[in-house]
Length: 196
Ligand SMILES: CC(C)(COP(=O)(O)OP(=O)(O)OC[C@H]1O[C@@H](n2cnc3c(N)ncnc32)[C@H](O)[C@@H]1OP(=O)(O)O)[C@@H](O)C(=O)NCCC(=O)NCCS
Image 1 (cartoon, rainbow, N blue to C red):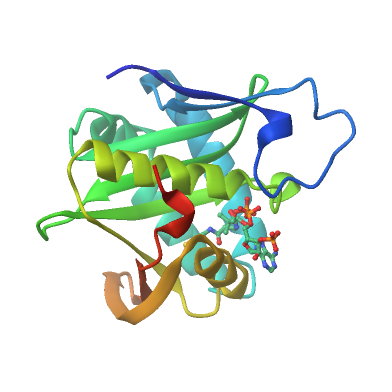
Image 2: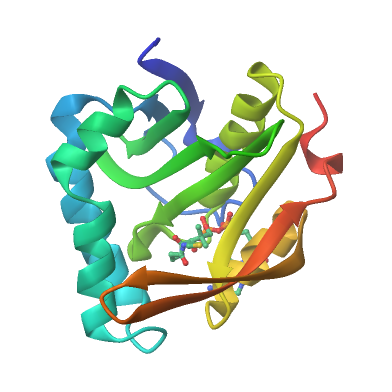
C-alpha cells in the first residue's frame, strides 16, 4: 500500500477556523505504519479519557481501549486488506486518526473509528478524514458508507449529520465484560458534498 495518501496545505482545510500560525503548517493524511501503533494507542487513550468522560463509565473506557487499541492488534489490522487505518499528521505530530473496515454486507464500508485530538477539533480535520473514507469506498468499488455512534455522543452526531449521514437505526451490542454499546447506526445518504 502506498504510505502516502494525501497532502493538504492547512489554508485549504474546509470549515477551518482561521488560526494564526497554522498557515505554514503541513497537514497530511497517511496510511498508518507498524511503527506508529504505540503513538496511536497513546493518542486514542488521551482522546477517549477526555471525550467519553460522562458518556460512558471510566471502566468501559478502559475496557474498550484495551479491546480495540492494543498496538499488536492494530499491527495485525494494518496487514488486513479489508481494513484501512489512517493517521492525520500536522507537521510531524499525529493529531487524529481513522479506521475503515469492509463489513460483511456487500458494497459496504464502515468508518469504525474517527478521532481528532481535543485541541484540534472543529477545524475541518474530521471532515478531511471522512473525505478520505469516501475515497476509499469509491476506490474499492463499494457503494455504501456507514458508522455507529454512541447515542449520547451529541457532538459527533452533529458532525456526522453535517457530513451527510442520517440516523438509520439502532446498534445495541454486548461487547463483553458486562458492557453494552448503545449506538445509533448512521448511513451516508447525502453524497452532494463529496461529488468527484
Ligand atoms: C467528531 C469529530 C471526529 C469531528 O471532527 P472535527 O474535526 O472536530 O469536526 P469538523 O471540524 O469536521 O466539524 C464538522 C461539523 O461537525 C459539527 N461539530 C463538530 N464538533 C462539534 C461540537 N463540538 N459541537 C457542535 N457541533 C460540532 C459542526 O456542525 C461542524 O461544522 P461547523 O464547525 O462548520 O459548524 C471530532 O470532533 C472528534 O474526534 N470528537 C471526539 C471523538 C468522537 O466522538 N469521535 C467519533 C466517535 S463515533
